[in-house]
Length: 258
Length: 322
Ligand SMILES: Cc1cc2nc3c(=O)[nH]c(=O)nc-3n(C[C@H](O)[C@H](O)[C@H](O)COP(=O)(O)OP(=O)(O)OC[C@H]3O[C@@H](n4cnc5c(N)ncnc54)[C@H](O)[C@@H]3O)c2cc1C
Image (cartoon, rainbow over all chains, first blue to last red):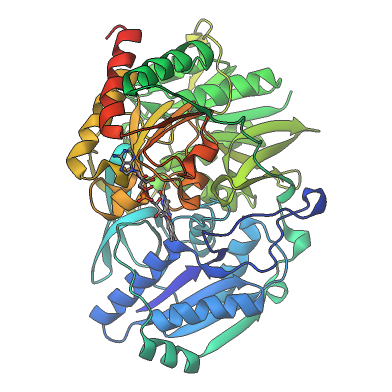
């Protein structure tokens, strides 16, 4: 079986965001890039499947500027993926273009029985690329997966929906799944893992050669802004009873939210 | 008049508020609004759609669409959009919306703007505002160059006016074509809570490690019951196994923007703040006056939550006559 894991490089969650002049974008200088946290569940699941099914190969694939893309792929390789695929792109692409480039690279690498990705990327909360790639590959997809059982080519999959409910699906490979927290506990890369990762193959594609560029984008992001400043906090004084009473009154009469 | 398709999600036979927001928005921007309702349980929702701005409704009155199947929903929505000849499409950024519309966008060689919090129309093109980095900043997404303009909006972001009268005559039945299915929905396991999901809730009462142990979340549930609120949590308590991940608020949990967010025993780590600073009013209850949560709060109480929370619940009861 051949598994692909789609990974995005995102700023570490501790990052304080600064804007470029005129809100043209986000100032990304000095940002520490990490594997999108939800993609770690996808990597872990792929490696677990590989461990249970000898002969399985796991390819980690990412799109982005070569340097940071390669670094993030090394983490995936250190966690146990076999090979890395970088789709080099130095420009921000829209979700459809990213999906097209990833699909083209996956096709160029031959068959794909299972593509795993994170349920969303924590930078743009898009949750678009997984289902889009499924459409372009012509396979079914299930998103927000928190449980997966594979027997032969059949998958039993649980998907998390509103209110803590779960939808249970049956689907067969080839297919695309996006991972939610709860699916597994991602391992840390071990020292031997990190050493081995240095020797693993990283293949490269150019996004433009796969047919996507700034001119193929169907949506554009502009006019970035910071959240509006909140008015200063009003601290309530007195003992607990007085604080509680005054807060309830303010919420009802001033803020009018209850 | 430009045509606009609105995906009319319903639950327990009622049209969801998130869809009502979109129907009314479309009407206010002078679109010809077509509501698409899926499932044989959608008759009341179809009527409610006509009372909330839909000029017409396409109702796929088919029991196969009563549970969520990605392939069937995809097919029905594509038929709905093509039949109504619309180039503009709005849907809630819900579990279903976020699952099916990106795929539909790819089928239509289009882009999608998901998780948006404000929307405008500029020269026939949708321009949607969306939070980036879970709300650390915002961007405007223009869909001008997309053949189909598809926007997924978060709930509670657009105003809702009182419904008008419904018009059964505006409801047309539509048929679901045959699909050879690769995905089968086997069952739906209900969640522990029948409450509104965090992403749809108007009021959230959220607890952190300050609650000391899982059992103490009962205090927050009591307050939530009085307010009609949904209970949320910080990652620290989710990771401790006190509550389920579906309740986590933050950059690796849910991004929420209720009108009232009450943070109890939560310190206000950057990853937590990212998920909730879009809330209109924020209350922080914490015994540490230096907790960062106070910097984002509208109202703050420095005190022992075990003392303050029960008293506050009593005050809410009195005010709301419960
Ligand atoms: C990659 C990554 C992603 C993350 N994603 C998220 C996320 O999505 N959501 C999230 O919430 N966190 C996230 N975190 C974790 C985050 O950094 C914090 O660790 C977490 O939010 C802390 O939770 P807390 O506020 O409940 O606990 P603490 O920080 O321990 O705060 C507990 C608070 O309770 C107060 N307290 C204690 N006793 C009382 C009392 N009796 N009365 C009143 N107050 C009391 C304390 O003063 C303290 O401020 C993430 C971290 C990482 C590294």
